[in-house]
Length: 428
Ligand code: AMP
Ligand code: GLY
Image (tube, rainbow, N blue to C red; front, side):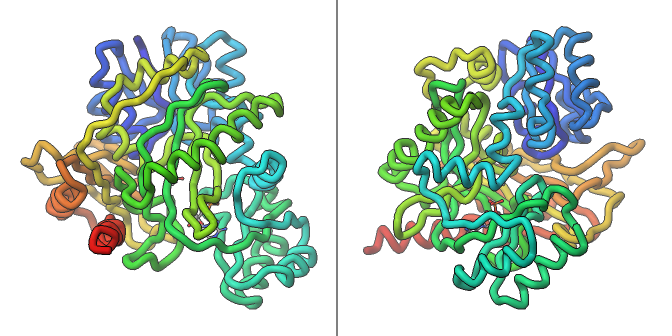
């Protein structure tokens, strides 16, 4: 097979790394890829939003399977365009991708199909939002309806903080049309977990749950980011709760989307909060997670090309994914300042790492001559697999100093709280 991976982050590097191991795959292309991906795939300079150019490329090269990493091309209808041309592609159509593309749509959908989620009120003006906030307690959550590069969600502690954000949204139009509508949402407490499933629209196959660490700084402080580290198993999710999630969240979502005429095919990422009242949906994403994919690919035993092909062909059947017993962990090395302002163009050096259990994925790099430089806030992902999560984390943290660039910053506490909780639970 010739496979095309759309995207340029650590998630796409991990997907290419896994595809490379498939006996079914002869050639891998990435658009646009990054400096790390370039060592295992042919990188083609087409941007992720250029869906016509991507389809032309797939047509011309007779690509057998395209796997889409980021949400943007999915919400722009890349799958519809490929399918129109008879090209095989893994991912949801534009209508199905609205589960991520519009938070108001997904909230109304969850309400209609009784999927447990936080209470929320949709608003179209600052006045409406202020009224809605009077009916919520602080902290409260404000969410911009459309895609906002991970910056469209804030937790506000007071009316003053809410007013400041609302001004940015409605007066300064910081998010443009993406914020024509917003949600004022109830703040949920508990542990977060990333629950992903493959679906061909009818059947589903869950991925191994993962835990992502979204806050920028140690001790769950600082702003929300795309994710600063991850591990699988998630540790905080019991088998019992996973069964509840499948029954009360996953199946109603897949079946509900089918009855809405928006059949969901591809991978569905469900961001969950494990609350005292049971698991509730924080968000849907219409794609693989980043950095969840990095740890999941380290644990997946099955052939990724084969399962993605089955999904894309509507042929998942009763496929069950198999996972290595070992744990996998990932720490994101970011540039100081991320997710706000940060420098680009810094030279990135990676010293040799002798431990075979460690895998380094590139997240935001390009090659300039002989140098590797950063082009994004999340630069490198250091990952490892080992018999236990503590061993995997130890291997990762031993290797992290091998990544060197000006202003490199990472969290020192990935996995720490999950392991503490497990120790406590064992002692009780
Ligand atoms: P979202 O893009 O909706 O997942 O929001 C990004 C992050 O904001 C989530 O991963 C949570 O950490 C946090 N968040 C979103 N919604 C809520 C909520 N209702 N209560 C508490 N935290 C939330
Ligand atoms: N790690 C969070 C996400 O992929 O959305």
